[in-house]
Length: 436
Image (cartoon, rainbow, N blue to C red):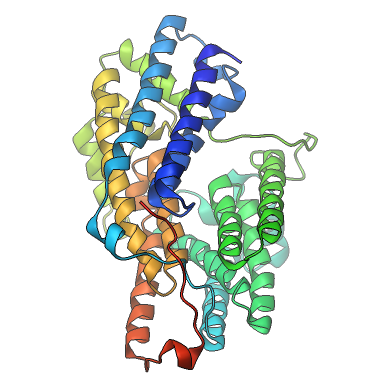
């Protein structure tokens, strides 16, 4: 292990311990935000200097980029720790209630079935309603999937993106129902959850496959009381995530049948941090910069379907230049570096990270609302995706937006329902989820 790699481990372990001492809860936005920063850097922390993107970068320059990256990320983690709003101190946020009525559990299962059916139907329509071809294509290389390919204009189908976002919401809702203590609904939820997880795994996207499994772990930790049960659940989900992400390497590019690799447990986070340093090197030795106005114009215009706006802006290989390939990410830091240069880029990244945290921080109020926990987790996914790449501000807005709408309607329905005292319902109060 090199000195810089060891320094990353020391700094991030210290940051996570500091955040835990402040937050005292895995759902607190600051602890989750620091964990996201850790995940962005984890590939380098595990693999060290073993990446082809570092070839050709001067050692002295690379050390400067690595230290600047570390300072920016740790600086974001420390500076966001001072963010405290009155409602965090006064509302006494409680542990989310995992008990829901039989009717509510059935509604969630039915809605999830409808979402899954629409998603499956959309794919079947792309392969002329052949189940065999659908199954074979799902197990094939990712770039052969007709339903998820860019059109002639280079843009992906916004309807399919919306349906895919709803599928993630359905998976989180089903994980919630699994721990609702409603036998029939839980059984149906378990079967449908497994089917959706299979779809997400074959899609080859690590993040989208991990989120439902992580939701399962979090809901279980909220539901179980015994330490042993929580430990077994956490270990089981961790092993499952390790097996799933390692298996994805076998078929992400070549497909399951075309793969010649043998299975092995492998940690492989996106190599975005290496590509960030490659972008830094390009910025240092080139006067070329991304057009920031066009970049954010693209983000704002992105949710509008190209069918309605044929001339909508598009980010092409010519726009990215030597900073990155169109299908990879360089994190939000790499994108700021591509627009402003190395040092101004890292300064802007620090400010952007603080703004992003404030958005996430405000979402903690969801935990006091009906179905707020699944919505909160989808907001967390959204924040992480924006960390990976800023165009995700608009690309991945559909799932959290749908979750917020669900919370809104659930809150309205709860407000309209007859209110009963705890003695009538047998409800028990919860303790604070975290303290400050």
